[in-house]
Image 1 (cartoon, rainbow over the protein chains, first blue to last red):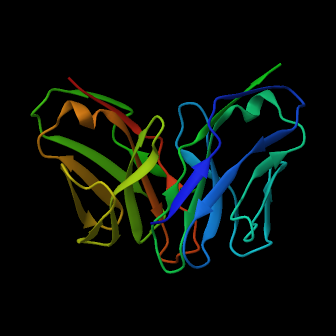
Image 2 (cartoon, rainbow over the protein chains, first blue to last red):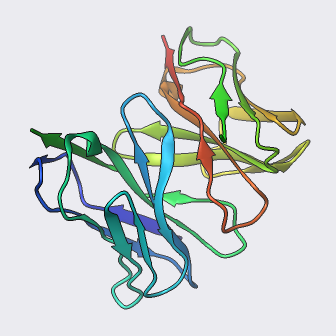
Length: 112
Length: 113
């Protein structure tokens, strides 16, 4: 079946450091890929998405590129802030299917 | 603003009790979803509904049922709560289009003693 694998956390970085959170997927066909973020005490919210190979999603300084050849969708940010501390979830969704398949989540903590 | 609300942020129940978790969305979304979130397991889909009175099982429906009598409201029911149902429960909704994002509520942390 479809699955999403994320790098295990927790990840702790200093403010202004470069961030990468790895995400790879297994799915038949051509899924859409998503990054969701969950801030403390809140529900998930969509951070960015990409719907086809080589698409780059971006938002709030975060970027991720849909790499079909490596089945990856790694999340990057050039300079993280304390306010980026949250749990990040990678997810996929197949064409015509309402269901999202999530990774296990990566907790990110940014220290000043 | 899109808003998905859940009836309780925290809930404590006893084993064997019947538990109702309510979710309301104000976006006129066709689809509504119930997930549970557990450390190390991410989010897992329990049930979803694509229309009033319609429902489909997700990955882990055992021990749960759902009800959707009105478009804006989707209820998750634990017929007889057990300790292994202690978890964070998240509701989400979206328009009927596979490419649309799902909007999440703040979650209900349920503890079953």
